[in-house]
Image (tube, rainbow, N blue to C red; front, side, top):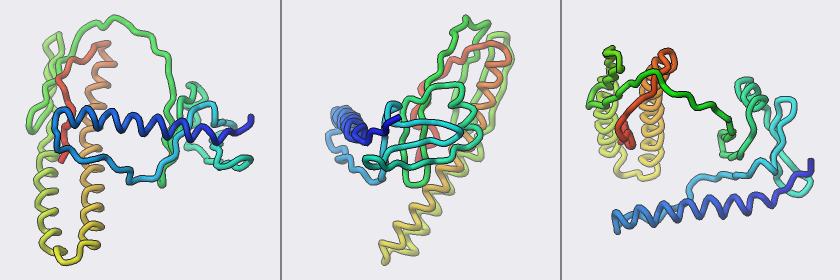
Length: 210
């Protein structure tokens, strides 16, 4: 296969267009929304420009120059079964989007999911109720803001140190919240899969965001 680095130009236009559309949509809701800025280096390319062989992902860099990335065993098994849609190369990770054809089946029942301040309550159509405790998530939110205030008081004279400390704090907070929400959502999905039920839930956008 001949590697084609020109795909990066098309992908850059695609990403920039998506950012601009989102900004225009946000500006209609809030005229004072900030202008978006690219702060992270990423390179995205479509499936036509990459190759996966023997557990190695090949991405073009320049004409006749490319980078080979050894895939994790889980990624190897997935990409053997499903097709690659796109690949995004970041500073510390490689994100591979793949496609999967699924068969839609009529559910045997339903599970209604209600998100509360400190728990998620799920009720099945046969009357079973499960409550997933999110007290630790609530505590993590309050703790995050308190630690943030302490850092701001401690390093208010050194903006460089403050930015670094706040960045690390935010990263740890996002990882903690993501883990707790992932555990809860995984348990609900497993329950639905075991029963052949389909979930019904409210808009969960912004859950756990600080």
